[in-house]
Image (cartoon, rainbow, N blue to C red; front, side):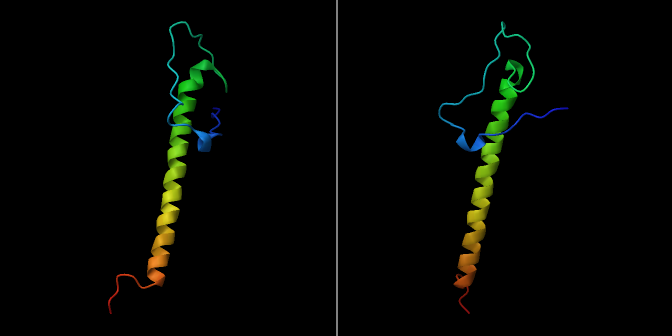
Length: 77
């Protein structure tokens, strides 16, 4: 079983990049650039893009926790 490449997710344009709609006249064509894989490819890029964004937010939150712990924020002992 082969997997589609998820390269370019960081450049995914949420405003302009959509998910390809298969047309009745589209030939069934597999492979890396086959029209039958366009939808899966677009959804994979969207999912990878979201995953990367969540990871970035998790890192920021972790850094904020370390910062607030270092200044003893919230502890009024």
